Structures are given as C-alpha cells and as structure tokens.
Length: 391
Length: 142
Image (cartoon, rainbow over all chains, first blue to last red; front, side):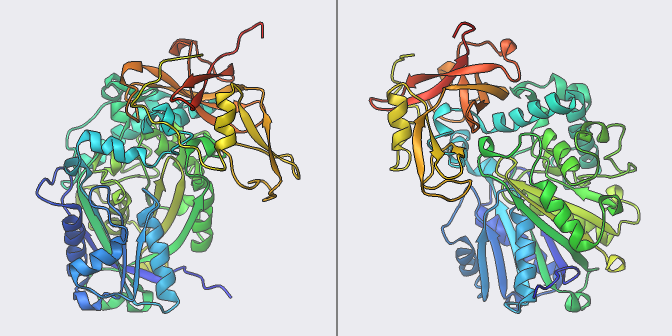
C-alpha cells in the first residue's frame, strides 16, 4: 500500500546566510549558521531535531558528512543522511524527509546545506575538484570544460527549435531584474540583453553572463508532519507534490541533448499535487546557465516543447508576467553556492508563500513550483509547495 | 595520427572491463561491445548489456565513423595539460553503430563544423600504451 505524500508535511522554518564572499567562514560554519537560523525561525530547540539531512560541500567534504555535522552541532538524530544529487540535492532531501516522517522514522527534520566555493578554494582547486565529476576514462582525457557540456546542449536546442542567443540572454536579464528587488541577492545592478551578448564567449554559444555566479552561502529548512504545522510561529508551507527523474550522470550518455528528466519529475510532482503547470503562481527553477532554465520551462510543461525561448520573452517570466521565475534572482543573480544552490530556491518559494517577498512579492501567491537539477542536465527533482488554502 | 606524449594530460587507466577498448585504440581500431542476445551496441564498456542485462557481450571493431550531434569551442580546459591547445572543439558524436560519444574534433575550424557532419576516428598517443580516440572530418573519398 502506498502513502500519498500530498499535503503530508509542512516546512515550518527557514534560514538563509548571507551570500557572496564570506572569507571568514568555512563550509561547516555556514551550514551551522543556516541551521541555527532555521531553528530560530521555527522556534525550535536543537534537542527537538530528530532527523538531519546535509549535503557534502566542495570545500570541506566528509565521507560521513551528516554524522560529522550532528557531532559538530551536538544533536543526536535518529534519521541522519548525506545526500548528493548535485544541484537537485535540496529538492531530493525534502522528498526523503517527508518519507521518513510519514513512515514514523522521525518527526522533525532539519535540512541544512552550506558551502564556500568562492573564497574557500583557489581557481585551480576548483578546476581539479570539478574534474572529479567527469568520467575518468571517457570524458576527462579530452580536457573539455564543464561549461562546454551545457553549451553543447544549448547549441543542439537552438538547432532543433530555433532558440536564439537573445532569448537565452533574456533569462539572465529577468533574473537580474528580480535580484535588484532583493537586498539579499549578490547582484544589484540591472543588465541588458546586449550586456549579455557582449560578454566574452566562455564556451560558445554561452557567454560569461549566461553563466551563474559562484558563491559562498547556505540555507536550511525544518520539515514536520502537516498536523503539527500550526504549532510553529510562522505561516506553514505545505508540500503538495514531489517527483524525481534521473537519466544519466555524464551528458554524452543522456537520452537527449534537448530534453531532460524534468519531463518526468515535473509530471510526477503535478500528478501528486493534482495540479497543472498553469495553476502555479511562480516557479523557482534551476538556472545554472540560461539555456537550462529554458529547457526546464518546456520539460516541466509551462510551454510546449521547443517554445521555451519565446516563453521567456516580453517579461513573461518576470513579476507581472504569466509565470514569474526565480523571484530571488536565481543562481544567475542571487547566488550559486554549489550543491546548496537549490536550497535558496526552496527558501524563496517559502518566502513567497508566506507573503514575505516585499518588493519582489508575487501577488496572492498560493502555489509555486521549485525545481533543481544536478550534474550536467542529469538529476531532476521537482517540488510543488502551497499555502493552507491550497491543501 | 601520432603525436608527442604530453606528460601532464590525464591518462585513462583501463579497468578489466575497459581494457579491450583501450587495446583496440592502441591497435588503431575503435571497438564497441555488441550484445549477442538483443543486438544492442554500447559505449562506454560494461560487464553486461545495458539494454537487456545479458552477459553475452562481445567486442567488435566499429566503423570508426559517426556524425556530429553538437559542439562547443573549449577556451577554458577542464583538465591540466591542454592549455597550449586552446581553442579546440569539443563534440558529441553519434557513432554509426548507435552509441553516443564525447570527443574532440581535429583538423577542423570552428566555423566549418555542421550538425550531422560525418566524422571519422583518429588516435592520439597519450602514454606508452594509451591512445585516445579523437575525430576528424570524414575524407570525401574514403
């Protein structure tokens, strides 16, 4: 017998550290600060945490990271796991937290991620660590950069569907517009399409400003059973749906260069929620490169396959458009903290559904989608979140 | 294609399941695994057929030919030892036998690459025993 996870759990606490350059902080400290803030937001003491999910940072990895972190915090969970699905990690953590809570394994799950890849590693170290994601016999020997993989996907999409570089640039411009409304975002100056197109080609057809930031920072959330949701000081946000899809690790082994497993994770999440893409008030999606946001919008069903380029034009993905995306600024303009990157998409989704978005608030937001992607278009995980009214 | 062995480039370390592939490269031959039960052809090498999980996979010489699925110019290499070679062309190739493969395209300028362009394998020596499969545009007369 299967248990539906729809509406089963609520997120009752969130914490976000500063993002950008945090040279005085190690990965573990950032992870701890995010956790501290999330528990404070939830009004919980540390002894009330009995589930812990972390992810391994680039800078201070540990083979048993979650166990190391529980030792550091002196919390003693009965459910403890380190997850690694790259940029999809935070989304997959919520699904696992819900599963653990609904099967009675634990009651209060702290999900906390932090890393400091910007100031904690030299450029050379970053390059060396990134190569560990490549297939050592069939990718690494060619010396091809990680961005070139995403670039080849972008070029294939343009060839098949006519997506233009101006359309890709629009994703960065819209993200920047939202970041300018968010004092917590790293970037605060407006951007134009010509700024993007005049920035250097780092892996053609992708320009430097088609690429996300590389930041220090971390964020955390607290997940509990929905019945307990009103025992906490802040407005609860409920999980209405979740879904995953995993097609490959290495891009050359993908079933497609122009479609992703978001085409499976999205429908799985929508089916659980009993909702459709057009029901979403906003979407916080994975924009490590501008082309990735376009392909996800298609694969998640917000537009027909191949029409993602047109969908992002004319302010359609900005506040006031049909689907505001990445209202915090996304990985392109808020921060990209490595594996913790998607956690800020989740915390932004919660902020919107609490109505705390201030200048960037989506009017009357009741339901929103959060999506993460890890690897090179590899792991995909989708969450649908909603207010009590959406239950 | 012969070439100087570059000391600091990554050298693939064959495992028992990939050794026949690298032996083929050293012999100037691109070899792929064929499933005797379902005829699936696969790359990279595996202990079993990823199509049907049969363990009856056998090595055969491939045509060494394929077509370009996509490409991008590398200006910032993802591994040490390639600094002197930039810019070069990363490519994803669909081999004539079906599998897809990451490689680098030689003997071709960036503005000459096209989608579905036919290419053929060449080998570049990386160490005493390792030759890495690269590609070049197919010769019209071959």
